[in-house]
Image 1 (tube, rainbow over the protein chains, first blue to last red):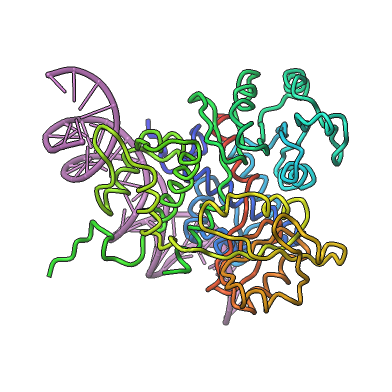
Image 2 (cartoon, chains in turn orange, blue, red, green):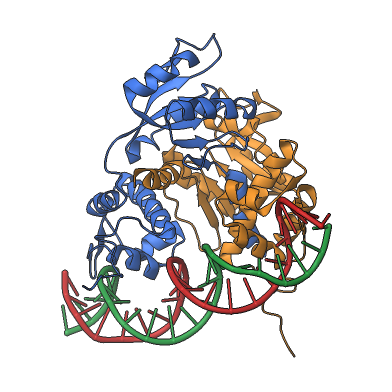
Length: 215
Length: 215
DNA sequence: TAGATTGTTAATCGATTAACAATC
DNA sequence: TAGATTGTTAATCGATTAACAATC
């Protein structure tokens, strides 16, 4: 029996690099869609993602012939295809921690909503904030964590809290079964191997951009 | 004459991947330093950065023997070394645009300060905000842009504004000579090839993390 | 038809990994 | 000495790129 190694159509796990790049394409495609574009070429995608255009065509053609020669890719259908490939077509619920400036900015933004994430609960330890409303969300107190995670089927925890509060919150999230944590605090989190932590790193990203500007 | 291709000691430009990873190491090292650690092993760095520990030792040993066998790397001296390699030992000044929740969060945070960046000016178009103080910064009006960029030697512009305002702000920044832009808005920016735009992508990062959780 | 852009190949280069001697 | 961890090698795998025929 011959196995087609060149295609991932029937395989299960994508190489890390491919999954990372597909996520980036999705981000740009979503933004382009919002700006009214209906079609995009691999060259335009390359300009916005800083990924080589041949690489983009190669990544996509591994899953099917999504483009139209001489025209480019239809944005809506490409978004659908990539979501299918990444198994992220569904809706995923987020619990957000910290109702300060950053938490409020996240709660009011639709970066997450555009990609199928929904902030279903906002927590804060400040008694003055608990019970108030921020956007469409009521601020919960921490003891309600377990109930909310279960009732709302929360799969992601986003930490927009001071560094001093981050580790204990992560521990509590893990204890109630959350396995994906997005950490905006400056703390380094220690977690079990089966938990995925993603840290925000604007300063590191900026250093990287600056390196090429300075040299 | 024999050129040592294995080392970058005398070369000028690092491969993209190396520069990106060194920036990540710097981020984690800075956080670890803040948490009181003085030494770190390549394995610990690997756990926090999701980069293979052999890869980390390889990256670093290309520039010198920074570690101590049986012990690990001294955090302070490694930070100094990497900053030298990246040519980012100095101080770099940022102009921040948007005094909303996100702008305020950035202005009050020290993620940037920890890496040698200093927010030297904050701009907003809301007349009610111009002239008020946020943290140590006074909110400027946009017409002051050119003067501030020149007087404060601004090299980076950070956009924490609505998508509708982003492109025109980027154009103005480019016109006054800024070549590195960090875009927190959801707009796709069109810029000349010599301008580096870095976009924040929390949702894409989350999709990527989620892919491995779901499969 | 002419222009544009995809899909694909082939060749090169950098990333990844396991393994292990060196040494703190 | 024993344990830990670096620095380095060698082998493999994935990423990158130029080039171009296919085709919209």
